[in-house]
Image 1 (cartoon, rainbow, N blue to C red):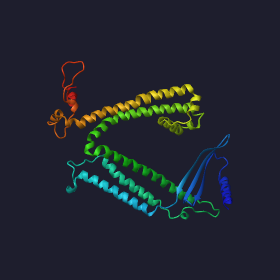
Image 2 (cartoon, rainbow, N blue to C red):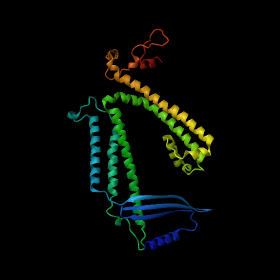
Image 3 (cartoon, rainbow, N blue to C red):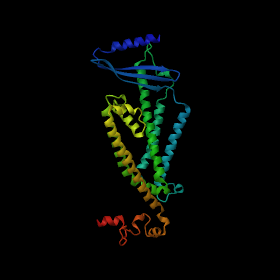
Image 4 (cartoon, one colour):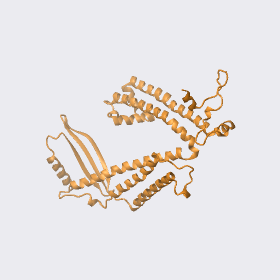
Length: 353
């Protein structure tokens, strides 16, 4: 009976396909009751002068099993917890009630407040998608006609479930990104004992960003060389996504089967890897290390200067909102000799200029 239904569906498909069709998409639906899922196979073929060519084949798994009761409870608990965290952030900004306020200075409204608001909105959106996707059983989704073929209405329902799964994955990814951003905020910028670390991160962000851009540009150039050299000879460099993945493997030191690649273009292969070793390994990686070490020394000076009586005395005359820069106090002794010089404040130097 199943073979007859398959033959009937293929005959109907061929009968409804015009003879002058240049390209067509075939969809095959397979229901697996043991895992309560639908397997959708999609094949795109094109008619060319040399014959029929299959350009892409993909499959999608769509689960039909409804969420369990504890999943709804976890969704509700997560939404309430996110709302409570946002309410605590609002309390820190408004400073009420006063009995629960321990900060000396209230927080100001900033972009972090919007991120705290964005988190419960995202989680609640995921809860709505999960509730909308609820399916009681497969019989209400997979409807068959008299020829045991899936109906267009059932195909629309399956496609609707696929779109819900697509947006659910995006919402989960956005929640993960927001949570990581908030974690970085608390790990680097919130607690008082990481104040000097926060200042160092702010200063080091710009040079590290440009170093990262140079590093990405170097690997992009390497990927372009790989694509030009092997796009017509090796399947793993046949298109841009595959070439990108192979370049990532090279960056991680995990390229396999490199001997045949070196034999195809031995001279150019040597030049590319030699330049990559010099630019990336010897220059860019060491620049990153040098920038981080220099800022680490400055952070140690900012964190420990108050223990020295000279700098502690210099900090007495500073106001509460004016921070002391220990590098501007003391005397500068040149290695060439001569009288020591007293450094000036950065603000004073800007005024002189």
